[in-house]
Structures are given as structure tokens and as C-alpha cells.
Amino acid sequence: MTVVARGEVETLRPVSDIALVDLLDRLLGTGVVLAGDIVISLAGVDLVEVRLQALITSVRAQAEREQRAWEERIR
Amino acid sequence: MAETGRYLYAVTRDLRPQATADVAGVGGTSVETLAHRGLTALVSTVSLDEFGEEPLRRNLEEMAWLERTARAHDEVVRLAAEHGATAPLRMLTICRDDRAVLDRLDEMYDDLVAALARIEGRHEWSVKLVLPPTSTTSKPPSSTAATPPPAGRAGGGAAYLRAKKAAAQLQRESQDSAARTAQEVYDELSSLAVAGRRLRPQDPRLSGLPGTMTLNAAYLVDDACSDSFTSAVTRLAGSHPEIQVRVDGPWPPYSFIEGDPS
Image (cartoon, rainbow over the protein chains, first blue to last red):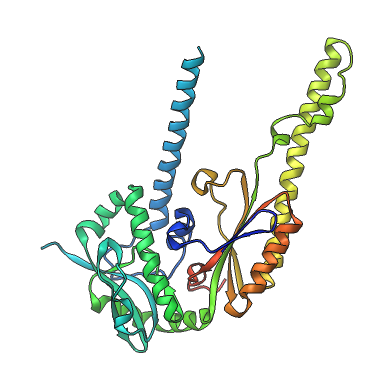
């Protein structure tokens, strides 16, 4: 269920609609952590922070490209 | 043939093997159950070409892969949670083989049993507060703009500086008040939940929610209390019209499984 601003209530969202960032908050930040005889002892959070950082960088690069294109148009 | 590992999704109790027949696991694998001392682990066989340490580093850089895998993991956990208390494991927990999975279950047996007892009949709810971007924080308040500036260049400059200072002051006050509201809402909802945690606020570029996230909270709520919990959120949203309030749930209790009871 989602409640959005000012007391307005939306209906249950389908599972596929769950924001990826909400999922990753939970799937990588928490959960039972195993240690020992495991092939992967991932510092999952660190890796994904790298990844999300890359995403932010690409969002920023895109915004800058748009800004430059806009500046060239109005020149 | 490539080396394989056992991907471990979650641990639950006494799940029938047929329960997982219709769900696809990570990488399109089938999901199996491993029963051990009254616990059931949900596992898939994954290729280490895809889920080995080095391939994972590459795959984690790929948004589409990450999303696909996260959603598959979540779907398996949700399916198990429909049948009873389920302790999700961190995404990408991979053991060498079944023997290694069972050894872990033995090692963690007491913690797992305690975790399952703690989350029985309870689910996680997410509550977020977002302070929308406002024009008052980027411009001087309109009341200042409406006041005619005193005559003379020096006077005009001083008025501009005063307005700028006032705007900065207003922004600080609005941020302080948003932080106070976030703490109040968090505390009030905590009183209706079994446990609560404050997660790190999300970046607006990732959440798609413009503004400043002042609260990203997770609560463990008794199923019997979920209606009163969401009603309380709705009521709080009504009394803070300046802030966007979102509640999502029920989730499997992802944020309430870690060994240390915080």
C-alpha cells in the first residue's frame, strides 16, 4: 500500500512496481549475513554503492549534456 | 561444465517442496528446498560463471542484471513468506554446496530459530517523509520582494543582502523543522510497531522523489496492527500537509533479521 501526501491513500501496488532502490536498501543492507565457507563473501553494500554512485554520475553527465545542448541552442 | 554454487534466499520452517514449484529463482533457475532440523532453506544452483566473485563484480555494475536478480530474490522470499515466518538472507549469499548450506544452518541454528520467532505474524512497513523542493528556499520570500527597496544604491544593496540572509534563515528553519517532524513521526509510529529502524535517506535521483528525504524508516509491525499502523500514517500525513508521506508494505521483514537485536 502506498499513501501519498496529504492523507491521500493509493491502492496496493503490484510487486513489479516496487522501487528498485527500496529493494536494494533491504536486500543488500540487511538480511542474515553468513560467514565462513562461502564462495562469495561479498561486501555487497560497498559494491552496490559503487554501482549506485555510477548511476548518479551517469544521471549527472546526462543532465550536463542536456545543459550544454540547451546552451548551444540559445547561443 | 562450469562450476556451480548454491544460492541461498531465505530460511523458513517446514516448507513443502511443492511450494516452490512455480517460482523462478535468480538467473531463471528452479528453486529447491533443503530441510534440516525443522528449518527449510530455499536454494538454487547457480553457475559461478555468472555468480562467482569476479563475474559478480561485473554484473553488479550492470543495472539490468542487478534489478533482475534483486526482483527474483525478492519474489522467492515473498513466496516463502506467504507460507509462514521467513528469514531472508542478504542477496547474493552463495555457498559451495548443500553440505556448506547445512553447516551454516547448524552454526546459526539458535539465531535463526530466534529470528523466526521474532518475525512470526509480523511484516515490515516502509515509511518515508519527503520535503518537496519549495520556491521559498530558492528565492527571497515574496513579502520582502513586495517591500519597495529604500532609495539609493547602498540602500538597495543592503536590502538585497537582508533578503538573501532572510531566505537562508528561512531555509535553515524549514530544514530544522522538517528534521524535527521526521523524528516526531518516527517516534510516534515506533510506539505502534514491534521495532523500528531508520535507513539512510535515498537520493532523489534514485528514488524519483523530488525534494529532501527526511525519513526513510522501516518498522516491524504485528499483522493484527497493520490497519492501525497505516491509519496512523494517514493521520500523520494529514497533520503535516507540507511533507509528502509514503508508506509501503507489507514487506518480508528484511530489515529485522540481523543477528544483533537493535
